[in-house]
Length: 63
Image (cartoon, rainbow, N blue to C red; front, side, top):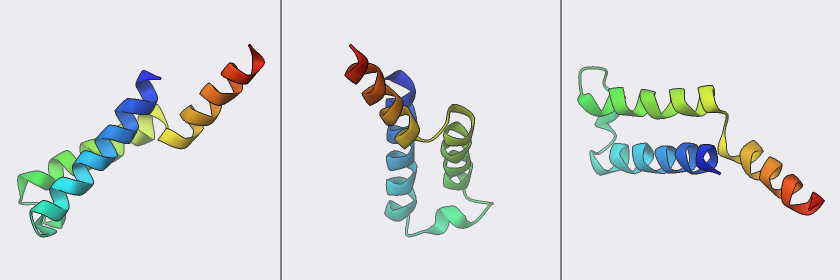
């Protein structure tokens, strides 16, 4: 459950931050770019939110 919330929350936050700053986060000289990359990296390392939620659903359906 923690991995789901970490990946889902991080993706929403970094996407909102990039939009809030007018998309300038795509510029590598701007600090938002670093946080966006960390959010994407977390999703890659921990796995995206959908598989975590599917696995949690499977575990709950077995009990």
